[in-house]
Image (cartoon, rainbow, N blue to C red; front, side, top):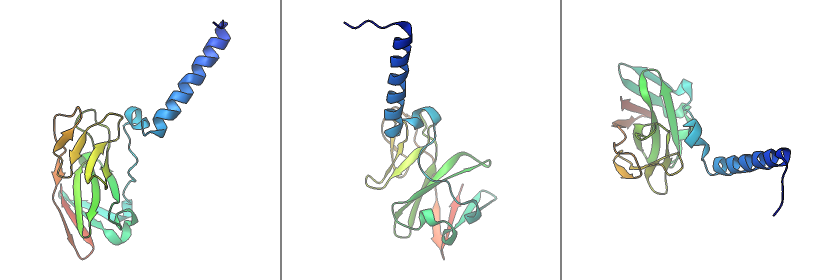
Amino acid sequence: MSRYNRRQFLKKGAVTIVVTSTCLCGLNGCATITKIGNTPAINPDSYALTNNILTIDLSKEVNLSQVGEAVKIKHSDIPNGLIIAHVEENRFEVASLLCTHRGVEVEYDHEQTNFSCASLGGSTYEINGKNISGPATKPLKDSEAALKDGILTIKI
């Protein structure tokens, strides 16, 4: 068995922590700590919020131009933020951004057509916000969205 002096022990421990942290962050584990997912933020020039009605000019938001893409919006008048997913051609789904378990941001998974908490071991939700699995006991709040002439309108 190898013997370590204090300096060697601390150095080896620090390397272990760095490697472990890097691995976790590489697996999106950083969201467990930061509570921030990978969904890009909405272009601030693409939307307006008036009287609890959010309007998004899709010609100004490239991250929603293709099916499978999503954006998040954080605004002082939207307490838990929103995630907006382009689910199918001319169909968008909107849900609260924060997982109901620990408040970590959720991500849109186009292959599974669901929302999932960005935290390791997080909860999974149907596209309408209903719980599928994980520790969360409450659903995500979903919002009604309508598309007309390139403008997405969402009732908050």
